[in-house]
Image (cartoon, rainbow, N blue to C red; front, side, top):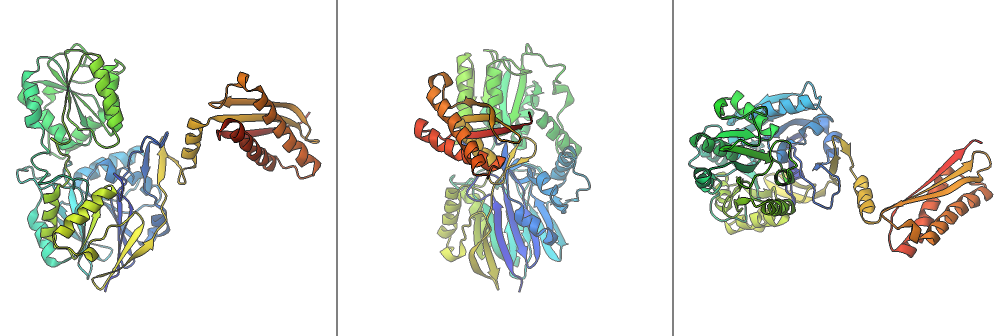
Length: 552
């Protein structure tokens, strides 16, 4: 029988950075390639992507990368992966259109992107693969079933069950799910982020009924914030603007681009007559909807800039009605609080939709139970979420009669191996390091740059410059000592003097013992100066000795 291995390179015990690997014999199938945003301690890091080392080492075995939709947590790392290897990508029509544009901006040519129907069947690398339609905040979302002779490996992707969903590009097809379940499922991988919520997510993901009264009552301008990739919610806002004959200004170019992709696919069209362009917009316009969008913390930072009159387009007015249509999520609390404080200082009115009232489009308990009922898997692997989410998802399966040996909670890099329809082992591990992206493409696999930034932010830096004669190595210039964030030089003459003495002594001793080497002496000086500074100041700053060899 086939040997099946399942593991994650990201997405377990964390929010984002999703990447799951299914190996059928020698064939590797990758599902998702996303990013996550850093926490406040990770200074200067823009975002984090998975460690591709294993994939690079085994690139000849990779049969395809499957992307279920176009949210950052599942697609944003694709350009970085494709720069390492040219592998086929399989995704939906809308996501493919967006990905083509992204790769073009990144200068990636000749990418092999295959458009899949939401319900499709194909053979890839000798393995049968099915996709099935799922309902999510992004159109064209699907799940994946990879065939093996032990049964299907099913990955649901992100989803909710919404019986009122009528648009074809959003609808879930429960018949497809049931058919896969009847044919036999070895293992089900189902997301965990909404597990703490009881009942079904629908209809609590819809915001129209909550914000419509504000559209009715408002006589002035409405500023409404929404995450850029929540297309379902953005369309709700646009539909309300149409209903109440209000003009709308899209503050973010990214949303305009997404809406153009929707229109090109004939999924949705924004009437041109209600759209206010950059050239037409000015701050004195009344009876207009200003849609402010962004990702993560940036959304709330933009709103703060508007309140502080620091935005390029929009300057806050006390007559504005402000609606926060995207509830605060983990990691954005500080920025959201700052935003509210600044708006209240300016005398503004805020209506914030609570995360308890409005749910994100992730499966709640009853949605997850339905997946277990329809697929009837032999094994269940909770994915996507912090550890408490994975644990609660596992407990849900246990409450539905799954014994502990049939529920597998993995860590990133932990490999579950199946043989003859049985979980043979989950004891093998891959060593993984987060890949930290700073700016466009600065990779810091081991976090060295990040660590340096932490040191600089807490203990400061000291630079010691010395000039020596090229031949004799005698000190002829300096030591010149500069510090930042460590001590006030005028109050620490004795420390500066002693650091200079240590530097000179290291050079003179090495010359005397006929072992002088510029790099080695600098390393020796760094160690001794660091120990001295720890003893005198209680801090461990970044110490940078510089020896310039001067030809006099």
